[in-house]
Length: 88
Image 1 (cartoon, rainbow, N blue to C red):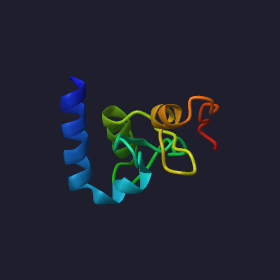
Image 2 (image 1 turned 60 degrees about the vertical axis):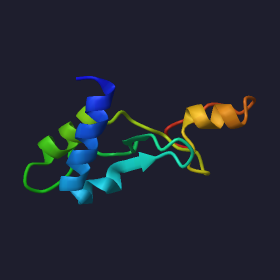
Image 3 (image 1 turned 90 degrees about the horizontal axis):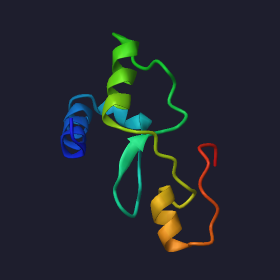
Image 4 (image 1 turned 135 degrees about the vertical axis):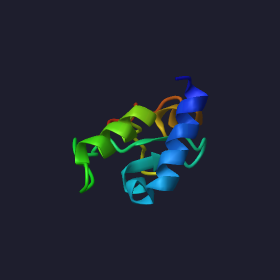
């Protein structure tokens, strides 16, 4: 599945299960979406394994800094800044 198809599939999945948005980060500059690094292995009630599996299938982990920027946007804004760690 290509990146474009993954994004569309992920957006469709989130539209169907809006409660899963709590586990999604979105960069304030570029709009890229990804799972919060602290997302647990299992989420949801009816089938916790499947919900987490699909989020991870559609979205890669995405750490954000305090300003809500992903690592790439932070680097573009401030080339001297250290990289973002998932626990920032």
